[in-house]
Length: 253
Length: 266
Image (cartoon, rainbow over all chains, first blue to last red; front, top):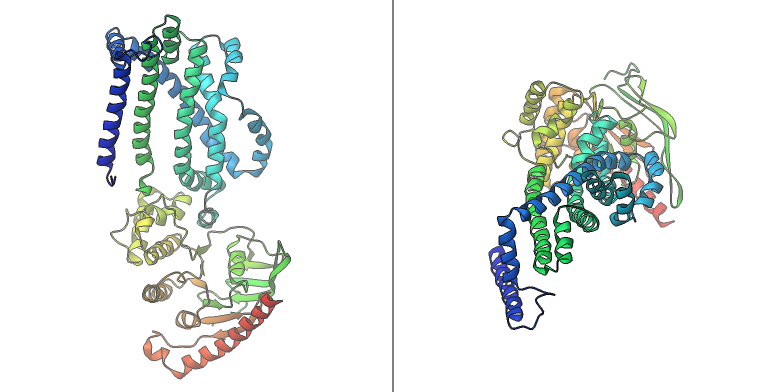
């Protein structure tokens, strides 16, 4: 079959998802799968309805989303100007390069023990995990984006009287913006990984906590519901992000 | 011509060498050139003769290895908005509309929004792009982009306009339209212009003076006053004086091209 329109792909996608869920449900009903290891979709749905009713599902989802957003926003707000600055200054790049290289390979998980020691099981600790997990990679994305700017445009700007700061604000930032946003999109996914890990280890709420808690009580449906919610939330945020991207980059249309 | 020694631009014994992979390359060697206020100088030369290097030095993008360059008797020490550069690749900011591109230099001068909007609108009109103010560059043709870049430079009111093969990437028809437009702008605003090309016809159509450069290292081979009458229409282009000038320049350019090919073969 030729798939030549987005509508067609959507139809095919919907059918395939439906078939997958139906097969899963059937396998569970027919007893091929042990419900404790893998509950049927209908069980997960029933759990969802119950948890929406008592408000827990929304509370956990919002709590994780808030943590990701705060940590990610702070990290981006620091990384964007700092990255542009480093990308346009060879001297400061040389100064900070070794430090960034040391921080970059560290998974955010490795910061959890220290952050718990310093900050306790607090919201700040969650934000800091998201920050530590996304800051160094974001910074590298932004430095790379900065370097991809056509030097002719910088030359033209200077020729029209732009100062160094003008060049950063008027040329490098907007010029690098498409790549910065593409990088931040990837980083947002990583930020979610960070927060779920942090919540799995130590938290009192959030989707990671919900999953861990479900496991403690052998509520596999809660565990799977938590996982589904992570997927759905990230997908929704991705759509919103794409809308924002179009707003921010009118010239790419 | 005013030759009281108060040149608008004075290139004085400038040498420029680059260190590349194949060792030191001398692009320009002890080149001297005075350009008077209001002159339209076209520099013609074989590719790789250092024409662009000369322009980059005047604009302050690069520094001479030896010698110096004066603008209004002051040495050029860095990039200066007094020398507005028009690039062959337009160098428009893709994220800015036509309007915002033309306003750029004025914004850098911290001119109030209303004033710079009016001024930009005037120059957009001069280059014939009224109605395209809100368009982004990637929706424009090459010729339109180059007109935006000319408007952007003019709006900034530079003392000197430097044009680096500005029409080389355009088709013949568009090129002709833009050449005529540039001559009109020159006659109206009397800017001092240094224009680089490898087209002898373009040089003859536009210039008040033609400078032919030698093959690398670049020096001046010929300096000719272009006394062809304006407008330089078909009649002028078929006149014997036109042919005579063309032959003189062609002989000189051809000799340099042959020399540069021998250098390449070495």
